[in-house]
Length: 142
Image (tube, rainbow, N blue to C red; front, side):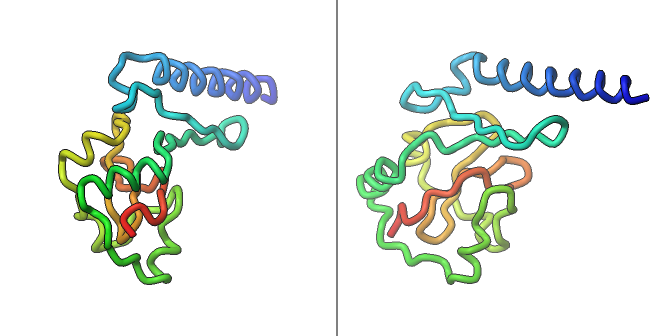
């Protein structure tokens, strides 16, 4: 029985790396607006490995874009809600419908299956269907 478990674990790890490798090497659709591919961060080991896409843009560059589109001057969220903006957590209620102008979003890196949202003064990358937070850029819209 132990042999079957080890074989299954090895197969599962191989499948995860195959999927991640295919997503990274795929067509230009997964590349950002500036031609840079999204960073894929892996944590854990074996069957419990999780894959996370990072924003692919620095806070300074995102702030410069926000300034260009006159999106700054936004108040930050209250501390209790802001601390819930973390990778792996869903967007807090009430923030879920907050979107930015299309012209601004088009200048941000694009990631298939993810979308950008504004949460107070922070820029957040979330999974499209579930709105689970993948990356947070703090203070972009201050």
